[in-house]
Amino acid sequence: MRLGRRGPELRPFCKSAGVRNRGYSQRLQRVMVDFGAEHSFGKAAQRLCEHYGIAVSVEAIRQHTLRHGRKIRQLASEAMSPAKTLIVQMDGTMIPVMEPGSQPDKRKGKQLLWREARLCLARSSDKAQALYGSTLGTAETAAWMWREVALKAGLDSKSHVHGVGDAAPWIVDKFRDNFAPQGAYLLDFYHVSQYLAQAATQIVRADKQRDWTRRQQGRLLNNQSRKVLRSLQPHLEPPNTQEAPVSAAHRYLTERQDCLDYVSARAAHLPIGSGEIESGHRHVIQKRLKVAGGWWKQTNAQAMLNLRTARANNLWSQHWIAQN
Image 1: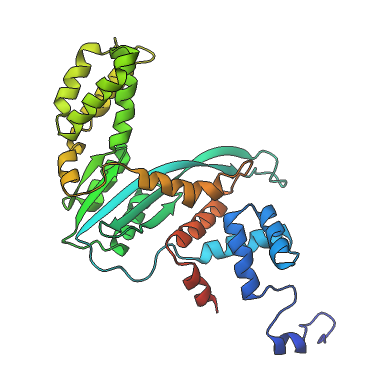
Image 2 (image 1 turned 180 degrees about the horizontal axis):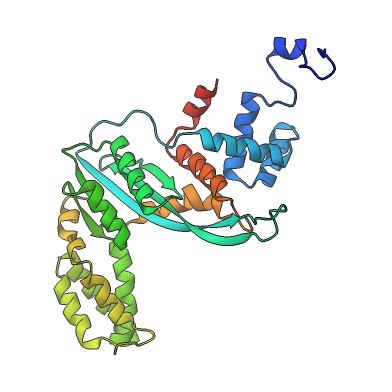
């Protein structure tokens, strides 16, 4: 029933049934967003039809997935119980981003570039499940997110904070801003081992490279980094050498002398590698945001990051309960 030529419409059945014209039920939206968060929007439409026999347009799935991605919260409102020891990690991964052109047809003049998505995590040392946070924002935004994730994971004034990663300068700086003097940052053992393995190719014969690398690894694990540096010193390449793996390894260790306390970490049964954050990149970010041929508007990419991170933090059901 229409009231007036161009006035509002009265739809008695829609009102009594609790539905609206061209609308989607909450249950259907949940399924659409579920598929849209895991697969490309085109494949999500195919999966929806295959599993439920419902034909929904790709655009509808895209709109609802991104709308809920903008609304969902990455972190729970309540923090976990205080943690005696907290493990924290941070790293970045590049995702493809598209900036539309300024002409009426936004496809013309668009720019394709790569942006760094920063992922952080925190967990109590006695728990297996970590909490994640992600952002496309600046290093300062990432640092704020890192702190919030740590607080939700149980950080308090008495917690010891164990950071581990590749010791990129900006990450170490943000760790110190957030957690000093409650903790210490440790250089990822396997990352530095790669530098040593590359240096070995210039120092010893091929059949001796593995033994030489293992010997340096043993020294590092015993906090004898100066012995490693002395082993590298005689083999440093001349300045301005195009490929200089020995100099690279020497510089990498020299600049991170305060991040090499492997003895204390192993004695406390704390991780010396950053595989947890590397794995997080794959299953939280890259699985969906680095699909072949896919480019994202930055606002849409952040919405998808929100969805993926909330799911990793087991907040999926809470979001849909709040929508009812």
